Length: 288
Image (tube, rainbow, N blue to C red; front, side, top):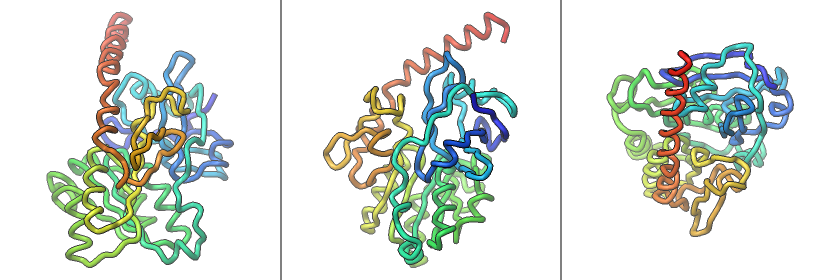
């Protein structure tokens, strides 16, 4: 069993949980994920690591309450226990293999969208601690849906906010902000890393292709089982079939077949919808 030592509300239906998991924290690296199971009857939920503290032995995850399992997880509070918290799983970000000298000569651009902002944070922090120059764009529909802005300010060189309605920062899509930084402000980057909704990552890669800017994306949203056994996270990368959970979750965005990935992502929506209806019916029957 794993104890929740901190719970915070970040935005509507988005929660931060800090879990006591010393062995996971000791081995965790940026880009990896964990498998969470609320109780013995719960399903396996893959979640990208949002932070880790080796000294305190804690791992932070950020969850959006969407389906039955994530909603159940988000009802737990500080002091409550989680049945399973397995990890770290997946391959860490490629840059963890670079020396501090190499990283100090590189400039990264991170593009984060929605809940994808949380797993961007440990990557940016890792790079900042090793002398890399890092700019971050955080995108959201509106200001109330922004998360991790204060934390990100402390670990990046420049933070840019882009909201669809203009309620905070730049008014427009993150892709328009990328173009503004490069075309109008003369920014130059060695690599772009995009994490967020699939459609956002698709258009980020289409934009960066115009500048021949290497772009890495995280396809963690495709995962179901998280061990490569279910095959649900198959994706075509460079014309070859890859499994997101064991070969990724990060890939060269310019080689990912995003249209196929989005079709696969939509495969289980009807089952999730049916599960939600059954869960609500069960709760109503018992007066919960």
